[in-house]
Length: 217
Length: 217
Image (tube, rainbow over all chains, first blue to last red; front, top):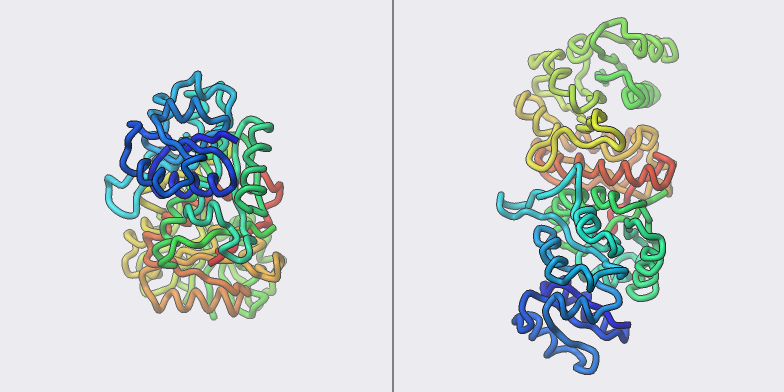
């Protein structure tokens, strides 16, 4: 499948590299077509499957999209990608509204009555936003089996059942997740984004980002 | 041990009854010494161990205190209990800042840059606030073994190591918790209080309050 990955940070790099390993063709998008980190990712990747470009280039290329940018810029990034390039496509939104301007640990720039997932869905009503993967470190996103044989939980939220089925397929068949908990519509993004303050404090207490939660029921 | 329980709702009732079953003497505190729910609890409880009174009566009685009131009134409740009655005591704060005035699911009245746990510790600097138990339904608080043989996690936050040791002893030896994750000082309450929006959405998706999370690490 042709897949776009927005973002060149550790999340974008990890997701893009995993998708290549799974046999997909991946175009990494960033503000400029020659972003240094995107070039570095391209150099280490299979040149037959990997390519880079602007957000719009990537969005036009991908049948399926991963948004791996920071929550504070996510709407701007999708705007740069172009609504017509996003129409009808599944967009996996991994972003979190972390605000580092007030010191550590970061606070949330959006919470309680709104979320980045909802902002994106409102701004791009013809795209299918699926919020998921934002509750774990990027190494775990693509390799849940590194902890407890994968016996832990990934949340999902989105308005479109068909898009959630496609996202679930990617998570389970592609990345190896075993337990997906569908919370409901895109407003459920508030729940998983507001989990970040607890995640950050667990990170501090456990001194590793390689932990996850299993919903015991 | 002589223990005070502030609050007559389902959390206060459940905690107070469990403490009686464990052999403790319990005084349930409320605004008035003849609160209907407190009277109902007293009637069903062992009269040699159970008693009721005002918040101040209960606080004067208890060597150890459970705050089972709503987050929005917690500071007022402890004020009514009296700072001199709280001095040097462990106060287990189970409250959450849920605001039901804007519809369901509730939002948080305090978040991001403050928490009820911190508000209480600031208002009563000579008491030892320990934030815990606020991340599960009350049935699970006192009977974690009802799910997965108790193989799930309870968080804890507080400034005083000795108070946290006493709280841990109550959780483990009294209530049966096996996995306590100490997040650090009382500011870590922000993490567990901000988990509530996710908890509420899981409650909606799972259609039962009898679930918990295990921190897999």
